[in-house]
Image 1 (cartoon, rainbow, N blue to C red):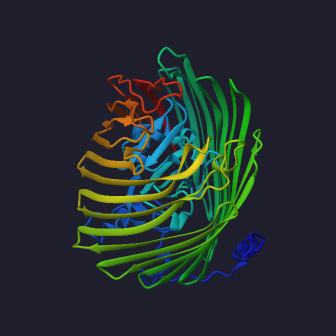
Image 2: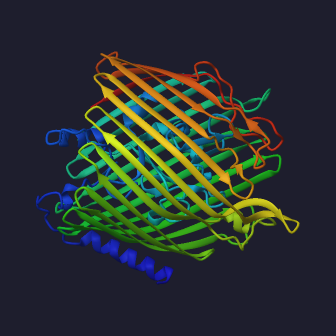
Image 3: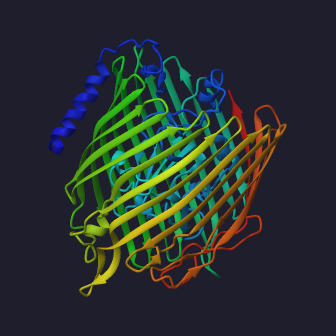
Length: 627
């Protein structure tokens, strides 16, 4: 099917869904689609409903792992969920603060406050982790990586981290995993909030939002502005500032006979300074989603979306612009048969580049078809998925997965899976003038993992081991007198991840640890900038209207170069926090990160200078909530 024909089919389908006579759904049991939540919801709501009929504490619901709402255990995946309460308690200035130290997640950055950041999931490259913002993929088509540094954590109410290959669901680049961030959604009753805060480094923040429902119409509008003078990025360097103004607008309408339509826009823009220059940036996602029941057991959903990543940089090399845009059309069909579910769909992606650099090609199109079967046979669960991608730049790629889950008893579950995935060459890899290699092939990966977990009334634990074998690694090296990206290396990544949590009375405890061996098989060296050990401990205590908490994070040493000569020391930090509900609708929070003012580095400049952390960071905020 040609690209134009596929797009026509999607448009016609979307139009038909708008006028499709919907079927009244009846409450017939767990195999009824109406029992499946329309939207991603927080664990609190689902747990409260189900607690009346189940003595076991239910796990959080997640949507990223299987394209539909399932508990973490049912997803047969390694998943971490960061709920709104945890985000509010930590009041992070950067998205990476939420991710650092989570199982299998490693972070490297060029300093603090909006500086270039890489997220390594299970030892894979930053280009190998897909970032979704409310279901819309966000990345730079030229660099390949997501704009991790510019995602505003102040507007997020939930984050799902799915570790392990997911190309059979999301296509290229989901070799290490998928991170999906959800912004504030509509609420059952109208509510609003106003927030203001300040901290050291002349950091200031103001934000406000409203959300609610009027009959079948829902809405959510939120905005935030954060600015800081920043701190030095290298020894004896000057302070480098950061500014981020962000907002979301979400409106929706629920149809009388079932189904819904929604429009969502998220935008963040600002400026970040770095050694030798500054960048004006803008990231944005825009999505239109139409969902309707075709029958009692068939739901069809169409999404049209656009994401942009725009950066204009002024440095010693001049003024450069790299603006990339991804337009997508996606059609999913969910079919229910008793406890089983089948999801089939198709997707069209079009990447375009507008740059001061004259690329040999400035657009490419990817078409895909995919399918997923979720089979529930009681104690054992089976999952099968298959996807075929056809890209005009680098050809066809097929990926798939198979997963098995077995409920050992009411509290314990075993899971095992095997998945294939691939990473696509970026525009820079293929077409950058005098540097790109148009003959590059995608990286191919095969991964396997085995895990076991236990979930009880007040605590849980999870353990998993995995191995990921990657062929045709894209590396920058010299061949035939030419320095360019080539397919030369192979990698093997092995790891162990442990996590546990306890909620007892007013105590909340979380602990995660990971050991990883990301190795280049050609040289037997550890892959550049990856740490081999990670640890994160969190504890919070509620005492009436006061809450107290702490987070300890530790990472082992890493090498900044592929030859493993430039060793960067490991580090450990301690963050403290306190909150106080001092009046009916008023609250205040104080966070002090890196309380011992530990200076550490996770990356070096090209000249060998260490990029250093900000050190001790304090922030005090006041919030007013109203209804």
